[in-house]
Length: 371
Image (tube, rainbow, N blue to C red):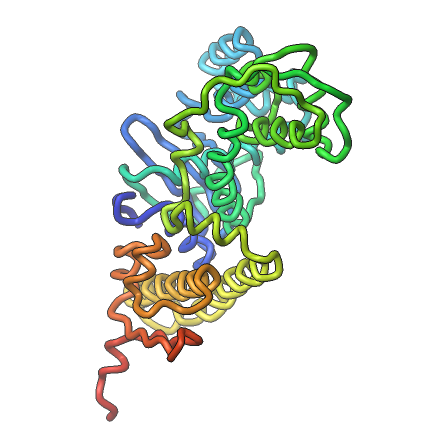
C-alpha cells in the first residue's frame, strides 16, 4: 500500500490500519523529512526506524525537552556512529534516564510525531506489511489508534487557544504560589522548575515533557492562580507548528463543536466509533480466507473505506443533530475526503426524512438484477 498524502491523509491511513488490525511499518516522507511508524495488530508500537538511524527522532526529542544537555547530545551522536550502540540502551545503562522515564518519553514522542504529520498535505506514504517488518524491534510501546486520533484532534483544537494566553516562547512568568496537586504529577514537576522570573521557551527546554504539554501546564497554572504572567508579547498572527497541524478528516471548527458537545454525547460518539471499528475487524476477517487473496484484499479495502464513511456520517450527526442529506456534505465538512469516497466504491446513500436515519449500501449490488 503506497501513494500520495495529498489524496490519502494520515488519519485515514491510521483508521485503515486499526480496522484491518495490520502489522508492519508505515513510512511517511515529505521533502527531506521522514517519519516511520511501526504497528502490531493495529496498535502503534514504535516510531524509531532502526535501519535509518542517521537521524534518530528520540535523540532530537530528548535534546529539545531537556532530558539530555546539548553538549552531551554531541558526545552521544559520536559514540553511536563509532560503536553502533542503540541510544535507548546507552541512556538507560549510563543513567541518563530510568527505563520508566524512557518508556514515557517514547510514548510522548510517538504522539508528537503523529500529531506533526497530521498536517502534511504533500508527500508520500508506504506501508510494508508482515511480521518481518518488526524483526529486531526493541523498546516497544502500546498505543491505540483511536486514542492517538482523539488526542491529536484535541491538541489541534486547543493549541490556538493556548497561544492566545501564552503567545510564544518570549512570555515571562514566575510562580505566585506553590504548585498544587490539582495539576497532576507532571504539572507539579514542570512548575517546580520555575525559580524566579523565567521565559516560557527556557522552561520548554528543561521541562522533560512535550512542548504542547508545557504550554498546557502553564496555562492551567495561570488559571489556578499559581502562575503569574509578568510579560506577554503581542499575540501571534500566524499559529506556529501545532496550530497548523490538525487531522485531515475534521476541520478545526468541527473539532471544536464536537468537543463542546455534552460529555455523554461525546463519549457515545467515541465509543460508537471504537465499537464499529472492532466489529468491522471481526466481521471482515473470515472474508479474507473465503476468496482469492487478490480479490479479498480489494474487497477488504473497499469495505474498510465504507466503514470509515459510516463513522464519518455518525460524526456529522453528532455535530449537526441530523444525518447529512448527501455524502457531499461530508467532504464539505472535511469529515471524508473525495479520495475516501472513491475508494469506498459506488455507494447508494439515502437519508431518511428529517435526517433521523440513513441507509448506505453498495450501489453496484443494489442495481444488480435478482436471479
